[in-house]
Image (tube, rainbow, N blue to C red; front, side, top):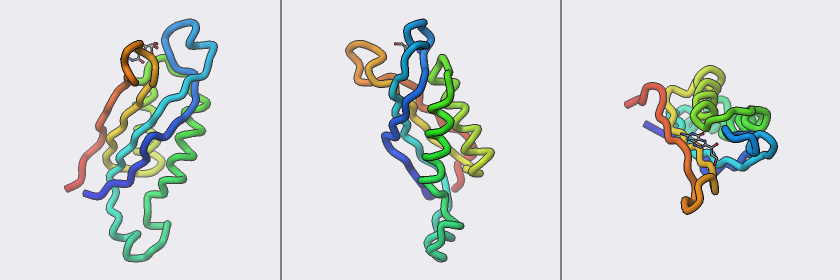
Length: 119
Ligand SMILES: Nc1nc2c(c(=O)[nH]1)N=C([C@H](O)[C@@H](O)CO)CN2
């Protein structure tokens, strides 16, 4: 199985369950691993056959910046919905990190795997 990835993708959004968090924007970091057979793109050398990581990043930036979720869980699932439905990604591993949310920890968050992992 091949992977197209985006690492430490920082996006600002309203996120959190506390009142003070509803009034500010916080920076999240997303790490994505998306299953994709890269051989057709390698053979054709054409973006048409590739999972365009720039297009994915731009779509997710727009989505996350305009979202106002309380939980990182909800945000993670919404990212999977977009990748599955709009980009036809068959399998995703996604880490959503919220830096500085817990004193003493570098970051906290969720790590999910969704979809069917191709062989
Ligand atoms: N499993 C989760 N736990 C917590 C979340 C969350 O999104 N998922 N969020 C918070 C607060 O918003 C926190 O980030 C503020 O410091 C607490 N626990």
